[in-house]
Length: 267
Image (tube, rainbow, N blue to C red; front, top):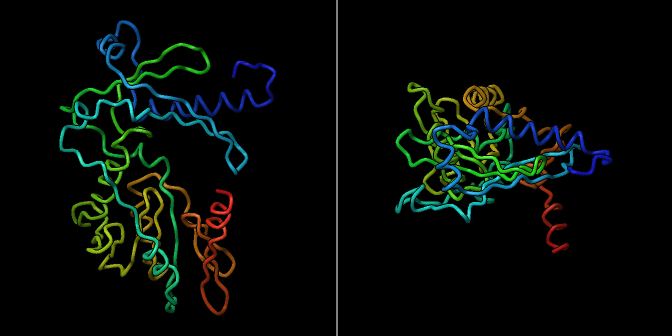
């Protein structure tokens, strides 16, 4: 960022400021000298890093992440916190996509945008969390009070799962998704009223059922969480789901593991 002659400078700065704005409008509150918690933040904090990446879509992406290995997990999360989180099994995904479609059935996928930032905020009585970010633009240190989950935290995956699955499993009458989680795969859900199956892999969701019912399920989810556009599997549109390529023709549905094979050969 210090090279003013770089042709990417303005785009990178825009990406960085967009990330800061996104965080401070949701899960971070910046602290300045003189603020009540500023001195506490300077003394006790977890460091962050701003990561820069060139995306396949042809744009720069900045993401600020916590250095989770430096967190005081005992103080912040308590001695009995369970950090393990679940993702749907590949066998379940293959079954969901590859089972022959019945008349009127459809398969769609939807990504939840910046999912971890949409996790439930920390309780008001939780131990305060402070973050320190070495600003790559100004070279100064910035301090924040952390109000909710930020990427990189040791507990972020589990807290997001608790948020998503807690809402999915809540009855519709109580404002929830109305899904029932599977016994053998906790990330595979069934909606009795709609007759829709749903699989969750962190922020990637896949649904199968009657097209109108799948649309209703996604609309309900998108009303609760900020999501990207729904994509549908059809003869004219293949799906890249979890790095697997699914496509259809008049005879059936097919799966290509080309991305996985390329990665395996490279490694």
